[in-house]
View 1 (tube, rainbow, N blue to C red):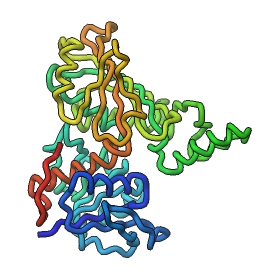
View 2: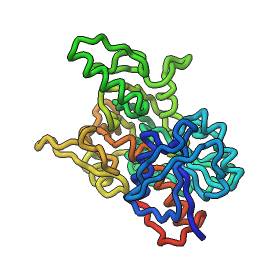
View 3: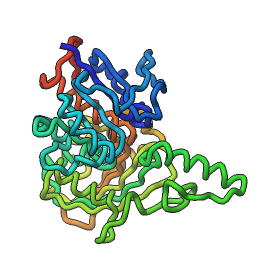
Length: 347
């Protein structure tokens, strides 16, 4: 039985990254289709040493495929994911459209891989917010060891989280400032070049933004509903790579040294932490890597059992594309989808 995959939103940042990662991880897809909106018909995207021409979403026959990796925004997903699922394909969706649906599993494979079996209710699996994905990978081993009761996190999120238009806006504003052009914000609510913006997504009635709400609710759904979390999400003038300053309150004692040992041995995590040598990771250094990087692990002296650390990850990779491919690998390795090629090992 062949595994046939469609990438919906194949011309976007995450869509292209999905194709790159499928190829890099040697995912045993027997056939891959690039699908996008009508305006992208005939456009070409790279898949390893192959070039794929884009199919029109409106006219593509999804009964031809077993799996759809979708990164086309919430509006498109709400309309199309159920149709695709009814046609028989499993949808792994990168938007926020299905994350809080009780019948749709929200998956980070290093954290809650077993929950993938819930796919059968709607044939849809949700990929979490990119800032949530790296956070729960870091929290999981500590929570398993001693329990986490409360998390306070401030994020420093790159403009690629807002798509290609966000990256273009940072680039154009930065260039314009050097020739005395007045920056005109379009994608972001304020100038992003040489600035930080304490708003991602819309404000809610309680004063928090939708992004901050997503982090809280998604962490509860993925990791543990008993964990309390408060976030402040900030857009920063970085092209790729999300950073987080994380403070956690534990249910029991754990030293910084014990936490470092645990994190060093945990899947998906790379610990880079030596203050004496100025060793820590910045977003620029994480680009192109699959890991969630942890640095500056230390005791938080303001609570009885507290730790603080710095967390960095390539948001286009782990936060979106890699996580989706890892979910696909889980489906393959559990026999939910099958391939004539050799199966892969999730890592």
